[in-house]
Length: 280
Image (cartoon, rainbow, N blue to C red):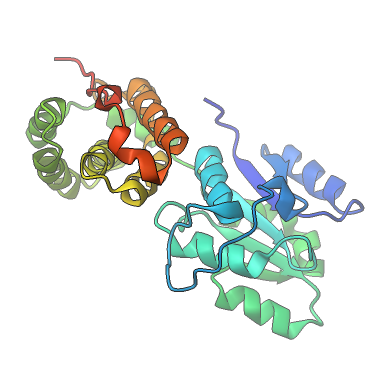
């Protein structure tokens, strides 16, 4: 897995992007550029303001899919980039459980007070005048970027599974995803360290499978998007659990759901559900 922290920059200023790239590279980050909304997808956005959280269709659906797949350390928006609907996108990303933890930094003209206020109102974590952003770029990236503590995760993953987690895994592998959720959630609550993310990831995969069994397409898709933030930072094996395989199983189920579409969820092949492989 790629471990170099990623900045996704919604910036199109060709005079400015090389400077951002140079600073990011110097401090050990990499950058992906999204200059226009069409780079996310050409389908028009659906106007559904009554439905907060993850949007599953159109460009916003593609946006959620891509951001959860990339798991960026920071999202960077140029408020003067008219080719990006940043008001809608920041609000949507910050209202969704799958993406709300990703920090959002914006920069723009210090003279445009209304635009700066608008960025704050839709959920941006930092809104800066372009001059300050330019002057303090390295420190700002390091201050606001969210980077997993892989050393701490490695230590936590060397610990054994709790008894509650073992019980939850047993229920998961029997196909009793409802009971698995209860045990794994209790294990998650009882664990205050970074290893708890393993339990949360497993229980959310189980919830997704449960939603599929009950023909809840949107619920399953949402959960499979949300689970990436918990499983992706973990090592391939954590507390004896084959996390790499669990990620592959979840991705395979997600791809199969997208291929079927909401109207055909009843035809989903449940043999695609994997079990949790762990050291006994």
